[in-house]
Amino acid sequence: MTLSLSTNRWTGWRLFGAIAAAILAMAALILALTPDLAQGVRVVIRATARTSFTLFLLAFVASALAVLRPSPFTRSLVRERRYIGLAFAFSHLVHAVAIATYGHLSPEFWPGRTGFANVPGTIGYVFILLMAATSFDRPARLIGPKHWKRLHLTGMWVTATIFAYSYFKRVPLNAWYLLPSVVLVIAVAVRVAGKRAMAARRRAALRTPVSIDLA
Ligand code: HEM
Image (cartoon, rainbow, N blue to C red):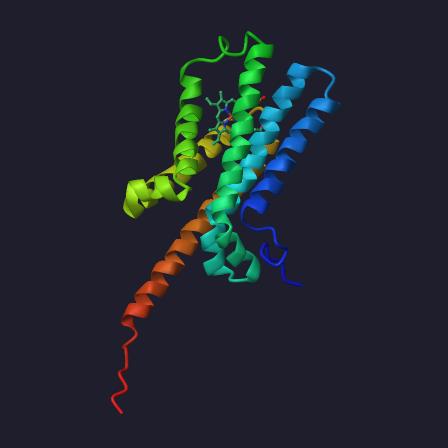
């Protein structure tokens, strides 16, 4: 059996809508099942960081996987990368709303954080916002393909670094955080291997002599 996002008709905005609805349903369920509201919102912050991480990983390795392991599924991942990326941005929007709500419910939250602690996350949000905005035709055309590529490449690596920082720093508190840390290292290795394979293919294509049939 082959698994493909397109044969299941989970494509485009329908795919985005389904993921967004699942994230909202998860948040609602967490709040309904946690007796203390502030505690529940804190769990939503952590849970949305995890849904964001999963969606980010899919977008991060999509084209590398399609090169290293071509299949209907990996090809549909590449095709749907825009909507997966937008779903990642949506998940992080819920992360932000939950953080703001938690700040209201627990007034000691913001004063308890140093300005420095907010720097990586703020930089992350700036890139997420810019990447999401330029996922639409008009802003993408406005900045042009060269700047688009540069922005999305930088944004992907900045986001990967923030995830790495967020997970690595929690390992001393809980060894389970080694799991996402290792998954991220593997994802980086897959992406690098995919880019190398693509570059090797391009070089091989350039070396292949073009025979012109004059007959
Ligand atoms: C200024 C912006 C941000 C603030 C104030 C913030 C705040 C928080 C807070 C309060 C938690 C829960 C901590 C806990 O209960 O242990 C958290 C978790 C987390 N955040 Fe954010 N965040 C921000 C932006 C980001 C960004 C941009 C990313 C990733 C690109 C990110 C990734 C994470 C991760 C990976 C976790 C850990 C989730 C887990 O426990 O599995 N955050 N954040």
